[in-house]
Image 1: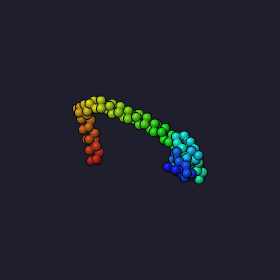
Image 2: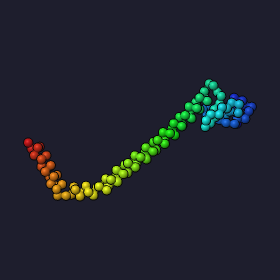
Image 3: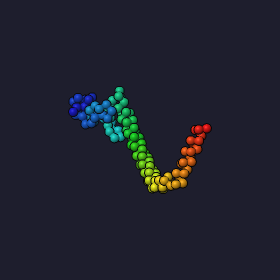
Image 4: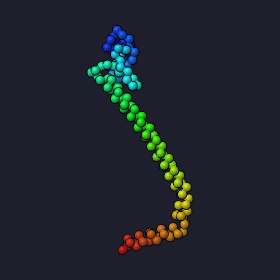
Length: 115
């Protein structure tokens, strides 16, 4: 593959922004890649901007994953709590005292509708 700007010279890399093949004379090393010295496309600036964006994305992904893990743990503990308390609740609902309260409530509602 030949350099885009120097067709007689062998290319050694591809610009991370414009994807053109470039030789050693045309490349600028940028963090996590190379860019060409093309001033029209502002390749160096764009590659630096892309690298900053990728770095922020990694940080946000880490924050999101830890937040998600905490949420899952909270919901799990909450579910476990309700699961362990469910037999107590069912026993309370099936008790005669609970049924009497229910019957009184329904009777009061029925009386209010008739007045």
